[in-house]
Image 1: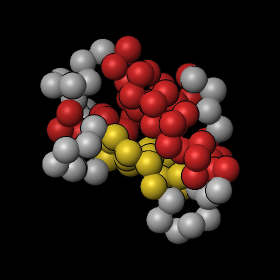
Image 2: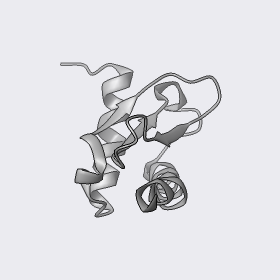
Image 3: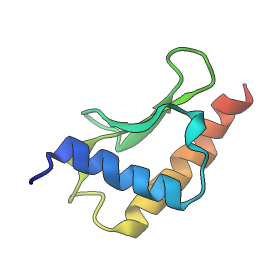
Image 4: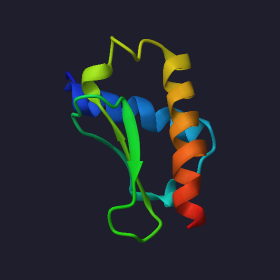
Length: 90
């Protein structure tokens, strides 16, 4: 079975999200979503204004900017601790 790039990106980032001990109930649908973006590697949103985070990763960054676990861990730490926590606090 082969995974497409979107599913692979979502699964990798979610793995490190869980490994870091972040609370998945803070995520919309309790998942990470892949979405192509021209510039960003990852980003967070609260489109529903319900203080549940949509955490997106751009799958086209796999193998270019995101090459190893340290890249994913650093990216996640930045997105969650710098941006998501601000949204969660209101």
